[in-house]
Length: 529
Image (cartoon, rainbow, N blue to C red; front, side):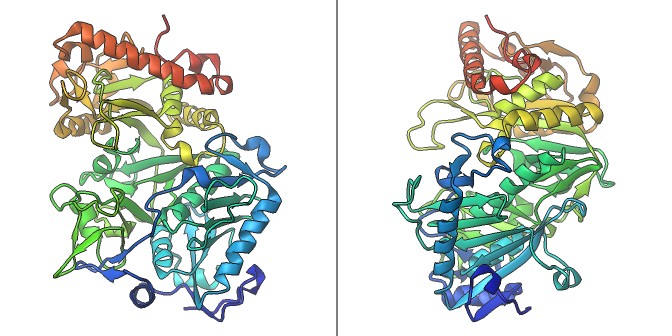
């Protein structure tokens, strides 16, 4: 560990653990944090308190003359005045100054040496320090000695509430970011994922300014780092499952940038859902949750301190964070060539989207901005029938610019590097949820394998009458009758009614983006009556 003077930050705590190694953070978590324990596999089990997920309604960006014209203001990016940020920061510093000890973690965001940011995390919980040590790219000893001043600092005072009477406050939680001050302040939430996504939000602002595309996606490549592909998809679409492919090398599971010379991972770790995890379904992730990893909000069973991955008594959003090198087929450093294929994953519970479609550049922009999937009964309280979910660019909560900005960058890079874009439906066929059946994982894997092998680049297609996309009509090892949705339905009238309803939902959702995109992109959605 190094010595560090935090007085420049307004902090005067005498005991500062700077870049403490994992064993020290383990010891401190078990000694000083209520409930923190070590699992039977050696992972640190910690609890995030009342907040077991992100609080997007409490996120604020400082409205500043240097950046305000770039920000997509609205429900995703709510403004905060400069003096309000200063008060939140002062409140965080006051709390941190009352702690007996602080933990400081230095790391990098971005594996590309020309686009790498130095991140510093200052917190009072060893669990938070270990989490960010895991999720950031870990510097070498030499890099730590020459680290210098950070490009961005996170002040995590999450155990201390925000001021309820502060202008614009909606709760005791505040996630505040200032691009100009190069700081993030956390109050009223101890959920560690807020720090990870704060760094991603920063990258989502800075990278497009350089003409680079930041992406909420997983990425894989062949053994040489060539033939790369990126997979976009919201929760439940199979992004993590399909990227954990033993035939491919993992570049990363969640956050990437498409630069001028290829793609790179932003993070040094992975952050996977742990609900119902088993060695049979996710062997790579299961074995990665060992010493050096963090398990959040899981239930330990005595004797033996074995994790019950099926127990949701604390939250359904149980999580595991682990260094990416814990995955056997991870490619280190996490860089690859330009992707030859871009895959949009969607779990269509209505059963009307084709299992695989080829998209034009304009259609890619349209469906990228739409970011569609669906929820099925049982996934959330009150969901009794399939419902549509749209999240712009498959990651709306973390965008800074208008979604059209990211879509334009995607189309530009797609055209420049001649990447194919595919939409793969991992949801239902032959009817909606409750009538049809879920597309078999083996069939989806066969589709993705065929994409990676280049087999589908010249495969026959048929235009879908409701969405205008080109449905691929032949894929090796996939039944042809499911590839065109209407052929898989027994009730033609029900198919037409359901497809028409979903197409209308696409059109209605896209109205909010129409002013920020070209006429060609507006026309690339479902044909209008």
